[in-house]
Length: 232
Image (cartoon, rainbow, N blue to C red):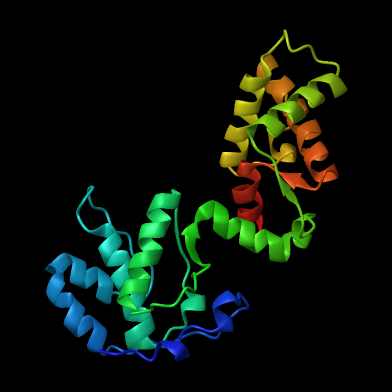
């Protein structure tokens, strides 16, 4: 099978504007008909499921990546869904590269083009924020602070609020801030209360100052990438 790949990958690959709904036919398609010979019954069923949400529960080495990448290829080659309308994310760079390269192989694409929407959660959020960050108060050229930059800013917040780092270690406060962000909570959502422990009350105040300084510097930390990405 020789897919007409030039019609599937173009400048639209980098476009993230809302698209019209795609009505997927029930036809199997040439790709699925051939590739399904390499799948077991459960895998083939998952690849062919193109309507609505799908949860796959399987152990390590059971072929989850194979199913996911085959499903993407099935949507593109058999149903004509533009690759720019498919978002595939994972946590590690290694897993993202594996997923990306398998999709390229299935689509028989030997170009040097990289698919921007098959990547890690953090990379996808960076790309979204570079384009739409103004909606959450970020300029397109925002900086991404590494762990040492983040710790320095936490210590600055201690000094700004005149809180001694002998009271609580900055690393412990930073870990608490990170936990709040991973729970999707902004400073206003963790405001101190009479029922909060002294540590939580102190950390929430530092969180407010820390986040304000980040915005002032037009910078984000790694957790912000997901926090603001989710907000978008």
